[in-house]
Length: 76
Image 1 (cartoon, one colour):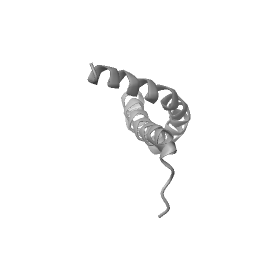
Image 2 (cartoon, rainbow, N blue to C red; image 1 turned 90 degrees about the horizontal axis):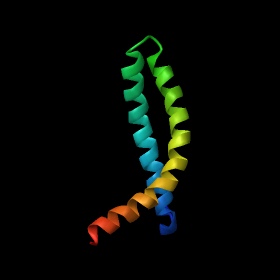
Image 3 (cartoon, rainbow, N blue to C red; image 1 turned 45 degrees about the vertical axis):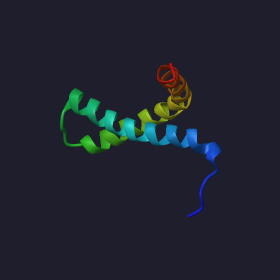
Image 4 (cartoon, rainbow, N blue to C red; image 1 turned 180 degrees about the horizontal axis):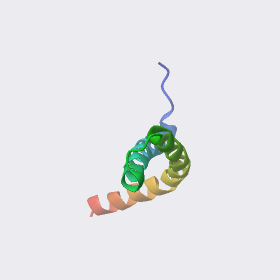
């Protein structure tokens, strides 16, 4: 398998984090708000598609800031 250039690492971290977190959060929030209904899976995947389109660009902006904040706290 061909490896990606390390300059893409922050984008990959943002992608993996946003996909995983939006998947879990959309499931959780849908479960809390409507419970298990007949078309739950369809509604969940629809909600996840919307949430991941918001989560990925947000993660691109937030992850570097969070890393800098964490580094400041650790290096003090």
